[in-house]
Length: 226
Length: 358
Image 1: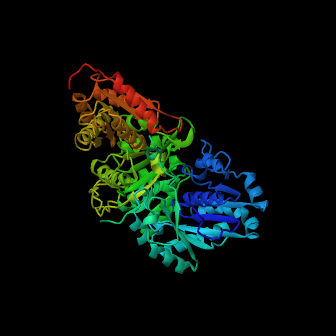
Image 2: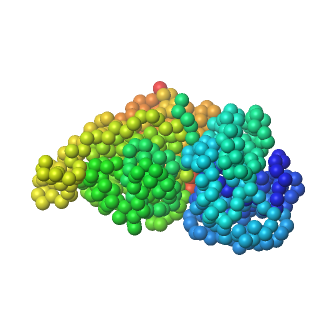
Image 3: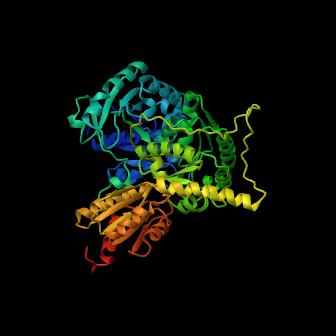
């Protein structure tokens, strides 16, 4: 599946807890790798204990994607530590780097650690919004959260990405009905709406365009195959 | 139809409490429940409530005691090691007959243990969350929607019986995201003539105290409290059953483990094994009578927990030797896979007495 924008070297995904950053970061990495690009995905989430990019390390590696995750991710140790490999990936100036940032401004603080490195290179910072998330249901609320994230990370978002979903039961109508929210948020923030995401099963049935079909990676163990 | 939102379990705990009229939250951060406190910090000022990060879990639970004494709806939240720290205060709250809601988003133990999900605090929650003769009402949600319903119910029942309520969740339930619709039902706060609100020389002063100088007076107080426990046992037991009518093997599981067990029961049915699921929703009072009734139709029970086997003791007490009770569990922060439970169902089905006619 092709990435629906012309990608810059660094692609940052930020947003509210549970807005779908991990799913979209993974989909972006898969799309770039499938087109033959060298891709590194960075799990920069040091606030969320479970359901994170590092869960899918083997899957990334099987598709030739390098995955950098926090030291001790998914162990029983909770340490606020970053791998030196993140610096190296940002400094090497080759290949694409997809960064999955932790939720809210709390998660975005760590991005500030790399701002000076990122700002001197071509990058896009995508602000992921989900119209069905509880505390960001209005464009004004979504705009307030982004200003907190920008203040914490010292980076400005360049695009909005809509990821309208209410979990496994999301219908094509749910996706289409959330389009006006994305457009209003885009207006409110004066940022372009880059694309809308939907899981592969329903993406072809949605009217919203452009649409980026993604795989629902983040799910509880009881939804795994028996 | 009310609008549906995508919420994290921990956020739903906090929002449901606010909707139930809780305006006082005292907490201290610990993974994997931190979002409860973070959400309260954001939302409480919007509803003119108080969010206070205490200097420790011990301080937080004693602030709960103080706020509950005034008749307010109050909540605290923590995860396993933090709950152990609160246990002295919880005993005092129970002894003071004060209503409040306590959240335990369980992580792995013992000791500092780990941050991954666990159900190893069952004994602590149902047998002795503090010293002395007392019980808490214990609710075990298995999904984000159910969290919202049980938190509301916990506040109402805690008020009605003057018994503290515990929501026993686990890291998986706290961290997962699911659609939620909030009911329009308003809270049912009880009259609280006992509350410390200032007597203004117009009534006798109310006193909230846990020290009794006479053993007879203390015994009488405890016996009166146990009469209320009897009424809770008779009226407030909750459970869910799925496919148990014709089940040869009934899996007993609560919380996140029940979600995994549900997937395994469905897989077993596809393989032609008559499996069913019994899910206690209240862990105290335990739905013993409903479980015991299944002895009439089922051949074996399989208890599944994210622990070395704690609730299995309540299953054995209810079954009382009439049927074999097997156990499957993972611990240390590990979560069973549906396939592991399926295998345990298959082996329980083979071990079940075959000679009995249904």
